[in-house]
Length: 400
Image (tube, rainbow, N blue to C red; front, side, top):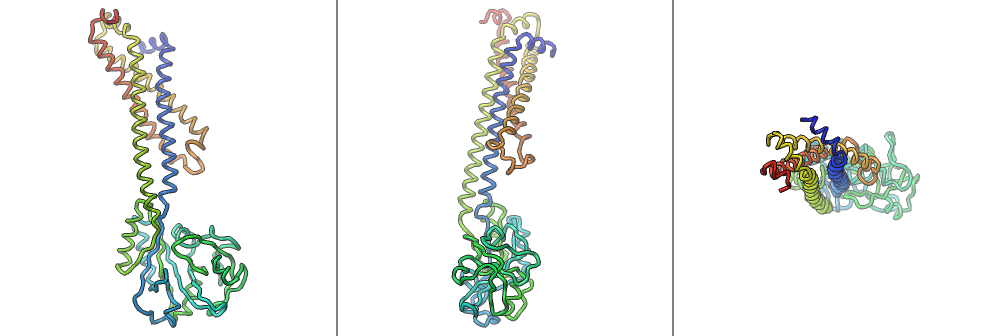
């Protein structure tokens, strides 16, 4: 039967090319638009899924802490509440939760300085710059003067810009605290973040500094958990899980921007689903009309074949096979054109600097487009054939 199809293609090359071009156009439009929608969704996800997904947790105390000499003015404070330190094992337990992406311990302590006669808050930064530290506290990207901490820094501190303006401290000045003198290696402006300190130190340096005021070792202790949830959809669940781990007396503090971010993602997913469904419907209708028109134009040919002794089943098989060959050819051409467009115009479709090629859903998009195109082509081949073959060969040839 294939040689008949080849002969038909050679006899009506122009019509076959028009039919294949119609399939190719439909597939190209669907594939390119699908990849464009995916890219838009990917960009929104990369931004909104991590919007407002950071928070902190701590445990306030209801009475004076016996190891602090001046508990009214000095001690572990968070949001002006006195808090108790807790074992860092709690931080490790929180990190294992499925709704949590990253955690880090933090030390925040308030003291009264001899120099400048003022109160100052000291922040102990853990090593590294994980996402929970960057979004909740202080990172190298917040540096406005000087430099960030290096691995072997000793007695080095960073000073907050607002505190520096208040006290006239500058980079490379010596900060005098009751326990020791420290070199100011940089100045930071952390913006609006859940945890802020006037002075930032490496975690081990902060442990030694705070020990001077508490007279006990802080090794293995923290008084704040910095948390980054898995994404904005799971942020509320992450807060609930962390609250259960730290206990009923614990407090979590976060911003509310995760809620509109997750709502926007949900709406965007609905819009994309509707648009993809509309594109698939357009693809099926477009390819169906193309196949139907091609067959109706040749109904006299079917009448002749019918009169020559071809059975209805053989004629229907012929139309299905012919339609499949043209549809597959159109799919290949459409995919090729759409991928060339995507590669030539990466700024419009797929910003390759942000999206890895391995993340692009080429196979699902191509499989979906090919499947629905071939299905539409088969249906559009069978239905007209059945309608035509309901008549006698004479009626078909006379065009009745």
